[in-house]
Image (tube, rainbow, N blue to C red):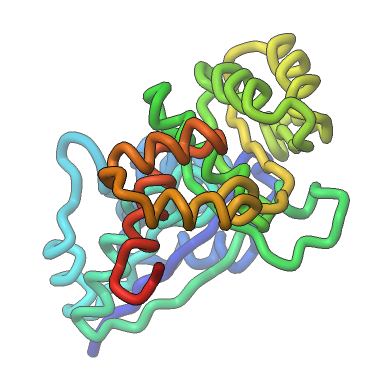
Length: 276
């Protein structure tokens, strides 16, 4: 007899969003493997779920993948949860899904709330496709390159941000393209839930008036690719010149306002045999 791994979606703020199926899964599991056992224990207590056992997969005393594999292979049912939302989305819980697959253990998903799709649902236009980018980078240079890249995307871009960093992110975004429309969501499904759909420069002013706490999600409108596609003829000529790759990339970056990394990659691609 082999066990099962259950991927259980948990509320992102409102306890009422815990589904009956999720509650049943938590109650029936031999072990709940949680991002933080204290958060999972509180959820179970408030939901009147009597948990048989809870272990954290992060921090001191964390349960290891091989320990979970042994339990699953011995026939145990293990429920995997994050602190909020779906496990494996911007947290390391996916390690245990990989463990189950390697061991030939059935994996079942019990879907629940997600801040990502909640933000997409709040976008006031039909969304045919979108790109989820995780958390915005902490370092300023990396964050600028991150934003430059998503501004060139032809899909809706969605990312998480920390309350201590969201204003810096929006300030950088507004400096790059102040009129690009963004959706900024704070405390989704919680008591003080707020969201605005504004140009980046106005969204920055709105965010500055909010307390530096809570969970934030930002969605950025898709745009027409700029620079490299709009000025392809000029780039072709630069790529065909005798300039070194670094110098050619710096020239493209300066002329078109693209990131140095994107320009360098484009020059390398164009200089491949048969490309230019």
